Image 1 (cartoon, rainbow, N blue to C red):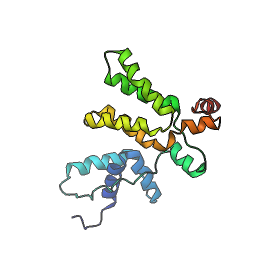
Image 2 (image 1 turned 60 degrees about the horizontal axis):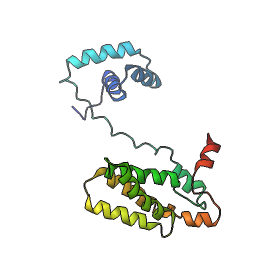
Image 3 (image 1 turned 90 degrees about the horizontal axis):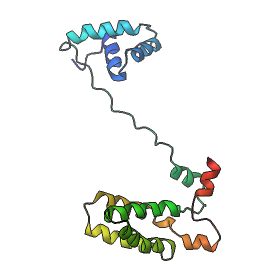
Image 4 (image 1 turned 120 degrees about the vertical axis):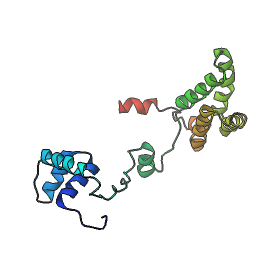
Length: 183
């Protein structure tokens, strides 16, 4: 029964199942002060598996939430909160070109004619015009995953598009100099 305490063998089987490894179950039993080989645990699992209706093991615990992976955004917010955050103009233009080729797959010329004014909108104030233009395209194509992705990209970077302000301070609008320092 589920409320009955597990025997030592049942705990070994349970730990082998939860860890997915006879070796890890053997290491754990060693921490309990009961050294046993992974081969012995394997043999116990084989034997108990044949009588599986007799043994009712508790469900495996829910996976623990892992710490978020390292993120430059988290690091910047934590250590450089006063820094000017800017979307690299080249990276932004790559996203616009991706969308242009998606909208005009048959014609590079049409894609270039479409993206030119958007690059201008992106570079000159008010920068949010490019987002407004993209949102109108999304409104006409709400089920298009690529359009949705690119519109979300620019919406998420709405506060990082002040290229005219950077130019007025003679600051770079790209991350190339920083990327070269890091490489």
